[in-house]
Amino acid sequence: MTTASDSLQMFQHHRTISVCKNRGWPGRVQAMETSSEEQAGAAQQRGTKMGSEDGARKWDVFRLGNLLRMAVVWILCLFYSYIQYHVIRLQLPHRKHEFQSLNFRFRSSQESKPACIVTGASSGLGRETASALAQRGFHVILAGRSLERLEVVRAEIQTQSSSASCQALAVDLTSVPSILSFTRTVKELFESHDSPGTLQLLVNNAGVIAASQRWTEDDCDVTMASNYIGHYILTHELLPLLQKNAPQARIVNLVSFTHRALQRDQIDVSQLRNGGIQQKPADRSYYPLAKIYETSKLFLILFSYELHRRGFSNTEHKDRVSVMAADPGFASTNLLREVPNWLVQLSFIVMRLLRLWQSPTAGASSVVAAATAPWEVSGKYVFGNQGLFCKSTSLTYDEQLGRSLWEASEGICTELIDKHSKYD
Image: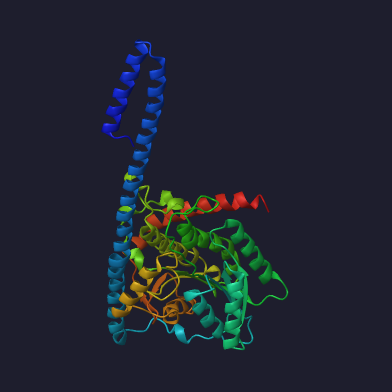
């Protein structure tokens, strides 16, 4: 960036050089040309520095915008969710309970043991969900990026309950080759003679909030890839295996109250790989991490409802796969691991003061409730640690938007699977 003052000085300098050339003073011309280059370099450095300072100021404002969205808007969304939750609780004595899923336990010794997959099982909600399902009689496949950490969780679960059955398999949801390798292993496992049971449940739990924009090898935003696109591809690959066990089969998607912060005009399905949001040209140098996280969770709800319409409502009973969306509220997990530690600790203190904080065990209860509801229950949004059916925003029930997202997701899924299948 060159200032008006720099431009004027350079103009005057070039004019002086021209005069010296006309008068035949070569030595002076050479000296002044060298000086001219130095001035231009200095002006460019000043411009670069000013541009960096402007960028830093913009980044500071943007970080403040992210902070305000996460600290204010998200808390308001959570408050609204709990208001709805408590209204439903007050109505429960006056209406029939929809289900008592938390008391579910697999007991039959005559049938094949049910099996489930839990992504993001190495910590937090995934870890607690896996433990609870193992105690309820499921053979649990612990899925996550670190096989070493998964093995630690497996050992802990089996120490807590000698009858618990589980195993660890690594998968990186931001990597399509990793997803395809994982699903091939799962298919081979359940088709083998020593199969651990029948795959009846897929819990899409893994999630991340990236503090800066990063891209996968297929040019997808990391937050969107981990939270939505990766789970879409995983579900796409495992759905036929789940359908073999229908109607006793289910998919549970872990969603978030933060989707309530979004409006329709902020969503752009055509930008799915880039985060799925509409950005003004002036904002493209920023990374709206809060909004992209919200969008990834909104898309997961839209996907849940669209899959329910396609795979449950409009399907013969024998092929039905139930689909549920589970919102745990705010729980103490490492989801904010990329956010500065002081901010994470502050958020935990605020949530405790507002009585909105939950332990991972309490948070996981909504996921377990959704997972263990009667098989005929589908297309529901489960919120809170008592597993109540609540309503997500009206935007999530927009069937046209759901179809558009499905088509965009299917296009990306087909493209990436075809691309990486060539190298197998």
